[in-house]
Length: 429
Image (cartoon, rainbow, N blue to C red):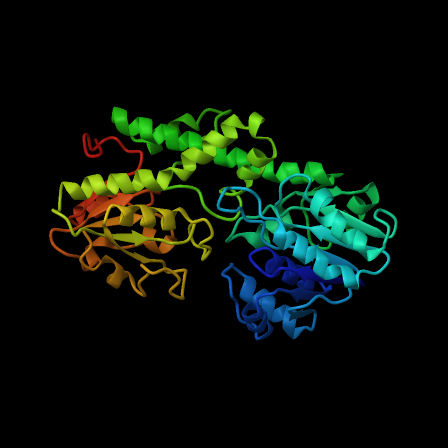
């Protein structure tokens, strides 16, 4: 392909997308306002963790297909992949989208294609991007083409899913959608489905909202199971043998840049018609407090104050280094409100980024009365509990992800408890 692409935003989506195009023989210039991240990338160093990213970045730079800076350059295609977080009041913060769009306007040439990959509330292309793009004095749909093609990948498997997943492309005009489809066919082997921009925006938000509602259902079931003496993980496993049932799993809350955020876009957009969506968000947002309450109940029967809890996992999901909206952080806050001392450890987060974080697992569990697993990293699943140096009597273990072997931990002398497991009758009453 003889087109040059400028990717604005070099985070968890923008950087893998940029190097994917570069590895496909397309000249790509990456842009980010984070000067430290830009300098690291230019020196073939990663500021994020993703399987296969290092070798792909090395190749892209070594072969001369990928350059980076803090400002855009002239290109035929612009891909915007910047954050779209929520404000403290759960409303959408679209300022990054607006600023990124404004930053490319001086560089736009007739025939340019602008693609938004960020997940956004419906009507963002129409209400936020297009007003900025009109300042280019190019005519939308005639010599300036715009589309929304939301990312649909999971951290840890981004490159595999960039290639194999189906993709949704919503154009402001049919030609915009067709041009975008042609571009992504550079590496996408899944089917590319064409629609309008607002439908594409809604589709992506719907996908993540479906998962959030399903998880909220699982979390409510977990609470019920504890009250009636059932292991919800086993019950869900049996229920999912039904050919038309797919219940997700419970946990300490929902995190990440998508599932914990996107449903709020719909609540803000149309609050009177989003009762279930709103309730699901509140249910999942309440789970860190639920976990902390369990922990406090366990500790009250063991210590007479001055309790210490070790949190295993700060990332929002297993085997990634992404702490955005992580429920682990909210569990820590809730524990501290009970006056409990907290330490934490995460093998995927190399730099100490949280006040409770320790550099080693040994430091985190030292003198702990309770160990709570909040992130199901493979490193934690493979722990040998009989090799851990803990205080005596050994601390309780609360597994919020069904990631540890009850038999193995109890044989090593630990008291094991699991979120959604009512079998230790009376423990959480």
